[in-house]
Amino acid sequence: MVKAVRVHQIGGPEVLTYEDIEVPSPGHGEVRIRQHAVGLNFIDTYFRTGLYKAPALPFIAGNEASGEVISTGPGVTNFHPGDRVAYYFNLGAYTSERNIPAEKLVKLPDMISYEQGAVLMLKGLTVFYLLHKTFKVEPGHRVLIHAAAGGIGLLACQWAKALGANVIGTVGSREKAELALSNGCDHVILYNEEDFVAQVKQISRNELCDVVYDGVGKTTFPGSLSCLRPRGLFVSFGNASGPVPPFSLQELNNHGSLFATRPKLNDYIPTRHELLEGADTLFSAVISGKLHVPIHHAYALKDAQKAHHDLESRVTVGASILRP
Ligand SMILES: NC(=O)c1ccc[n+]([C@@H]2O[C@H](COP(=O)([O-])OP(=O)(O)OC[C@H]3O[C@@H](n4cnc5c(N)ncnc54)[C@H](OP(=O)(O)O)[C@@H]3O)[C@@H](O)[C@H]2O)c1
Image (tube, rainbow, N blue to C red; front, side, top):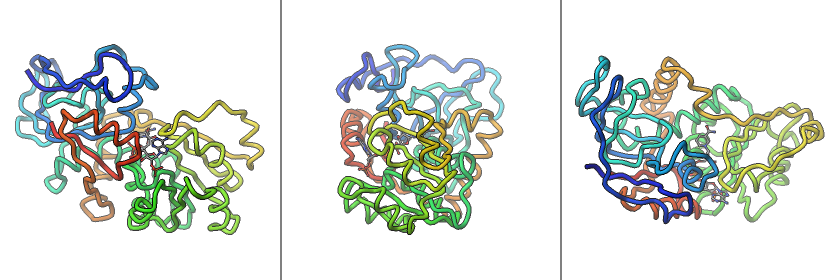
């Protein structure tokens, strides 16, 4: 028996149930890992509330983690007991041990801790594709990053700055503003107190932004469109405040022939080759000091309810983990 956090019915944090489960021997192509750290993600809350549909109930929550290989199934040749590994994978991460297809794992370099590995695979790879593939950030670009002090936000601000961008971030409190400023933001806007569109116009002297990275959704729409220069790109990559409401394509025309996209990680990392390439770029950025990845909050796995409560209450900053 191993410990896991399962969801038997969708709902609030209280539906996260810490319980014993059986894990069978790893099947063909699978690896069994003992997990050392599990990444906490806003996406975990979407599956819990039903905004994103899990394939079946009950399901084990969670989408990224790290650990050590303890056994391998038939057909696995590239992983061995004792290997340090990390992954992102749809569901199943809130557990002390699990089986997972070997093709989803990457080996962790010695200089990357289990804790960092557990928060880099989903959050870090998302920032990698958003800044390098969805829109290729280059020196001189002006970028707006909402929720700049969040898990994705702090990584995105650091990396965008390292790529030479002028970074504007929005945050929900003065403490978060300090953190965002020390993690790559050139300007920070308190979007609960200030009109962020007016602030972006002022900061940019009405030149506006080349790209807006918006993981907040409902409450920052349609303001995000007003922050873009003609032919700029609106990247709507999440719904922390709720989904962006349906809108007319004419809005993109009205705001200056804008482009808009709603990307997701699986579509940008569709092959093992791209997974390894993305992880390599990401780990190199961390090892070279371009990206700092501290763990801001650590919860016991059994306290997953509190972790979700804190995340949804905007109490957390940066990256958080659950310890199995
Ligand atoms: N598309 C993809 O491939 C992909 C992959 C991973 C994550 N994501 C998205 O990235 C976003 C950030 O994820 P994360 O795990 O790093 O979370 P996070 O940013 O650490 O937490 C969400 C933040 O959103 C802000 N927020 C604004 N309105 C909110 C509201 N009504 N309720 C709660 N929070 C609100 C809060 O920051 P302030 O207090 O500063 O406003 C909060 O800290 C999420 O939307 C997630 O879905 C997308």
